[in-house]
Length: 248
Image 1 (cartoon, rainbow, N blue to C red):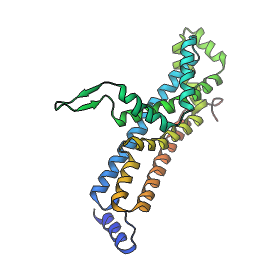
Image 2 (image 1 turned 90 degrees about the vertical axis):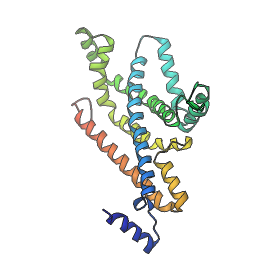
Image 3 (image 1 turned 135 degrees about the vertical axis):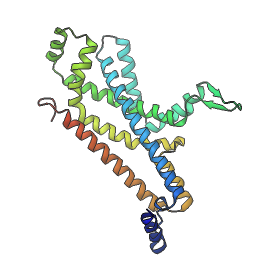
Image 4 (image 1 turned 45 degrees about the horizontal axis):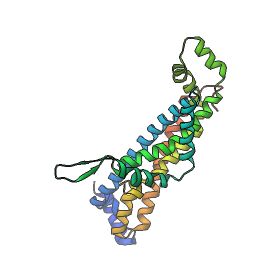
C-alpha cells in the first residue's frame, strides 16, 4: 500500500521532483476533492446544456414569434460574449441582487453559492451553442418524415420528441461532441470565482509546496484523461445511435 507514496518520496529526495500529491495525504485529499468538483461541473453542465439546446431548438421552430426572438437573443448574447465575463456577470452581478438567507447566528448566506453560479453560467454558455447544433440537425430531417408523423396523429411536441429529435441527434452528434468537450475544458474558468475545482486545488498545492512544474504536469495529465474518457463515451454513443442515411 505504501509502495507508491514511498517511490514518489524517494523520487523527490533523489531528483528533486516533488509530486507531493502522491505521497502527502493532505495534498492528495485536496486534489481528489478538486477532481470531484470538476466532475460535478462537467456532468451537470453537460446535462443541463443538452436540455437547453433541445428545448431552444424546439422553440426556434415553433409558431410564436416572441419566443423565437427570445431564444435567438439568448443565442446571440451567450455565443458572442466571453464565458469568463458571463461567470462574473452572474456571480458578482446577479448574485448581489438575489435575496440572501440568514443562518441561526445571523450570517447572510447567498441564495446560490459559487459552485451553483458556475453551473448556471457554463450551462447557459454551452446551451446557446447546443441550440444552434440541434437546429442544424433538425433542419436535416426530411420534411416528409415530420409530415408522416403528423399524419399518424402525433402532435408537434410528440413528433419532435419521438421522431425529429432522435433523428436530428444522429446528424448533429459530431458537432455536439466537440461542444461538450470544449465545455469540459471551459470548467476551469470556475477558478475565477474560487470554485474549488481541480485547477484551484492544484494552484493551492503548488503555492505551498513550490512545485509548480510537477503540479502542472499532474493538471495536464488529469485533463488529458478526462477529455479522453469523454471522447470515448461520446464516440461510443455516436456508434450506438448510428442509422444508415442519418450519420457518417
